[in-house]
Figure (tube, rainbow, N blue to C red):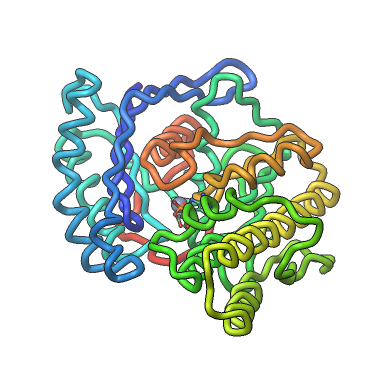
Length: 341
Ligand code: KG4
Ligand code: ZN
């Protein structure tokens, strides 16, 4: 069946069409991407140094209709060929969410097809289902690392989620963005930090050592705001910043974040004995992080394709399809701004 996915939770307007197949036994849905479109609003928000909700709303309104037309053209499909619509209901920026939510429901009513509301973070977990070789064995553990979330989620079976660890303050992506700003890098900061960090040449010891917050704590929670503050104080101490100092700080900050994420994930694996680890969310676009996870994680690891790491509508279509297949969904009448998974 053909599923149209719509995602407008933050600063990307995204539309995708996928073909869903129920898969063989044990039933693991398989999804083929037919069209994957993302209209980025970076240029709109960059002058403000972050996402402006009212501008995001305006851009989503303008972008959605032409994106759906483009997706249909790309796939040689007509609107009537769409069997199902999936749309993000949260978490995210409320004004931005409403645009996609209303658009999807109006379209679904016109086409007389179901409109399945999807949790954005669940989309990040299920984004690995586009790869034919993917095999999720349960219990599975997911590490979600994005701009708004840092969570360890235990899945005993499909569509069953239990948060076993999470950040007490900032999300890791948020820390990347804030540290980037302290270093004078443009928005969005995460990719800029990873580009700078990649220019670092190995030294025996870090030039500017940073803390690894909560790395020794027995629980599975995280904290990233102290790390950001440590960078702030460090910069005050060593100003003026030059390119070399920026590279050293970006590298050490990135490594501190990776060290904590890896340590807590390994701890969760020991504690919960999952058969599969999935990592998802925008920070998974960080190739150094993925490399170190591949080296250190001792159970099968699933990583989404790069284009599915950051926000997109393919993952929303996949999650909607999974709920449809398992007959596990209920209509919603409103979006849910900043709720967690
Ligand atoms: O999942 P996502 O696209 O949006 C949210 O759901 O929040 O994640 C966005 C986050 C941002 O904080 C961004 O800076 C971060 O992902 N990010 C990265 C990289 N690419 C995006 N962080 C570190 N390294 C990257 N290469
Ligand atoms: Zn996201």
